[in-house]
Image 1 (cartoon, rainbow, N blue to C red):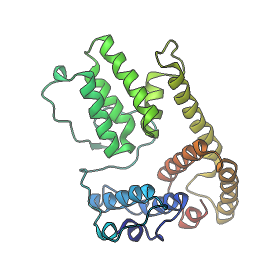
Image 2 (tube, rainbow, N blue to C red):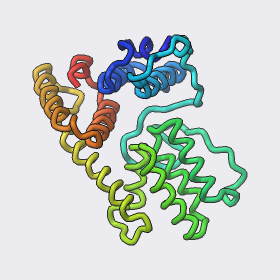
Image 3 (cartoon, one colour):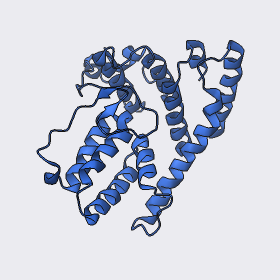
Image 4 (tube, helix red, strand yellow):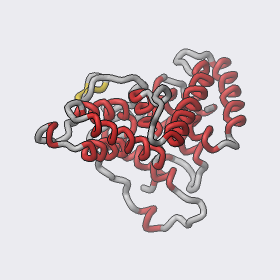
Length: 258
């Protein structure tokens, strides 16, 4: 099965339709219940997002099974910081290390980026875990780690890790950075996310009536229309919506309106 068959979408579906369909399916496909099925769904979602409608979909690619093993995965966390290596009562896999002292700041950063690429929904805990390896390092190493992470997040769109890092390092309060322009851009992106999140929060709960769902769906459509011509805003809108969808048990009818 190719990614479109797994998602139940027509080949070349629009990005917003892909994200909405994924949000609908993932409600009934929990990683703790069936990790393999969840991973297949998640891989199909990522592959569909990478699809370029200017290129032809090769037949051999359609026949390739989506089976990228990345280990056990767990549900999306709420954007709060928890103890490293724990998530909703589950133990996260430990990184195979000999001792903290043998880790350079660069190795810790590589570990963080690799883990976050595999399971971006664990960003807050992954960052907390990485910082725990740097506790005994000198100040220069910790500063190099932070600055290089800042540069990485400016090059690569990792929204949950960006939000976690900005909050942890308090980039909105720190002056004198060697990368002031980049730091300002990331701060502005985070502020944009929080403004959008605040704007859509009233339209998410688990106990809306059918009439409320209809009205809220219209409000969400209005917000989307106001942002659709701004690529940066639309990216953060999608992230905010997906986070809210993961936070609440929404009806299928309401999901269809989002």
